[in-house]
Image (cartoon, rainbow, N blue to C red; front, top):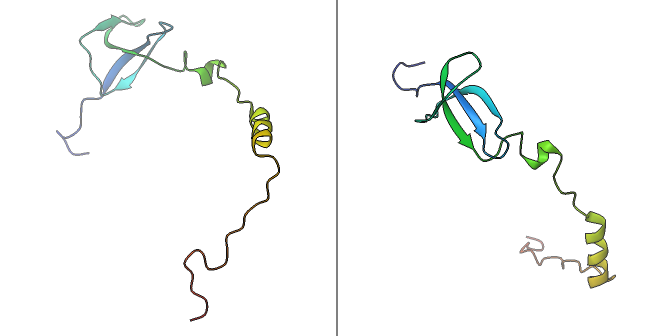
Length: 97
């Protein structure tokens, strides 16, 4: 790596704003706020809105889509209408050259 062109990559503590859980990782992000970690050192603290602790996908709280209901609603609305096929040559293709 070339010296002097890369940002400072250092330990940072991220805190979930919803759950309050914290984890220590490395980042180029900085903050004026600091927190004392379990190892006794002070690290910059970054508060974020969503982490794996509060994201619906990882917590199992995500909504399940009702795809069967959507299909039935579509069928009630449009019924069994015939499918319209595109005419030959309608896409701009030339017939015989």
